[in-house]
Amino acid sequence: MRLDADAVVRHEPEGGPVFSGTALTRYRDGDTDVLLCAYRTGSAKVSADGRIEMRESRDGGVTWMPVPSPLDADRGSPLAPAGGDVQLAGPHLGSDSQGTVILVAARMRVVPEGHASFDAQAAGIVDAECVVARFADGEWGEPVVLDARRTPDEWGIPCGPPVSLGGGRWLVPAERHAKVHVPEWLRGYHALELLSDDDGRTWAVAGPMLNDPDREVVYYDQHVARLESGRLLSLAWVHDVIDDVTLTARTGVSDDDGATWVGPRSTPLQGGPADPIALGGGRVVASYPHRNAPAGVRLCLSRDDGETWDLDTEFVVWDETVRAVTGVLASAPVAAERPEPLWDTMWSWSFGLPTAAGLADGSVGVVFYATDPDGARVVRFARVSV
Image (cartoon, rainbow, N blue to C red; front, top):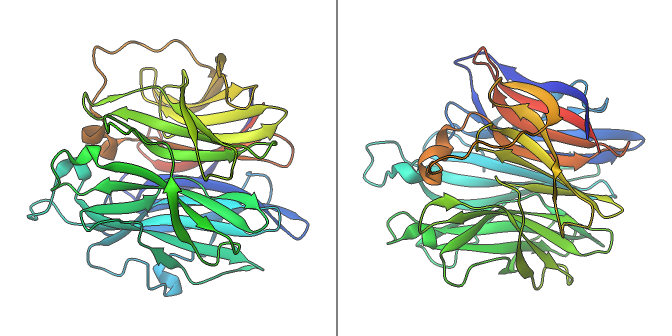
């Protein structure tokens, strides 16, 4: 791999808004190739003022300009935060060859520290649901809310980019979490799908994705790529909730558009969420935050549609040690005596959640959030040849 370029999508000096949850997709606007980036911004990683903003690039990622978000309060969306305890977070974007773009996000109720329902492990999140917006013919439709809960004791959110299945059909990975008052609530996890058969106008809650029947391992943030064969490849961020240890990523496959899944299969990829992008010819590139020292945002290549992954290709886009875009091959990680507990640390991460898109010239574009050496918060874009 080779780093071709990098750019700043959004920059705020130290003390400004905090960014998280980046998303990227590419679509055609007439003869113009458009890169669309969405990200969550607010006064903290989890805060009631969280909102989803968007920027676009029409020159291959060199420059980025703000564009209206269908979830922005300035547009008068009834789903946007307007005070109180509601925040928006976790945006994901997907597009198809016809120019339809789907934006999904989580609409969360957050209580402050000191509230009777506050729990530090969940950062005060007490409820959540899915929000979906559709862009077609040059404009965004009114967002809709999807309630993916089976019982009042859980909440459901989208957890991966929308995937076009062709013919106006879409799949969005989603997940349910038990609320914090439920005993062993971290084990109350369930991965599922949201499906649309009418080009994203309406959605239905559908069948499960990868899940552990023993509820000891959870498959967070399953991101899905559609391969040349039509097979779906899911890449999951895997966590042992009994011992609170993050395991290497695992994959699942579906040959029936997500109706059933086969897996999991282990990979050597350490980190997550991991986002796979199919480039054709069997090549799949995964982008993911690597949190073992030396930490950073990394890419890795599979040459056989995700069956195996070549760690010799593991490529550092962002090096957290020097807080810079580097574009070098990864060095061996330093073994930790014990990894930090996931749910106690994730709310303070200073970089992460990369999302990738295949670009018109065959390269890969990656967006992620980070903190510069001077403390500035940034959303960054990098273009990498594979």
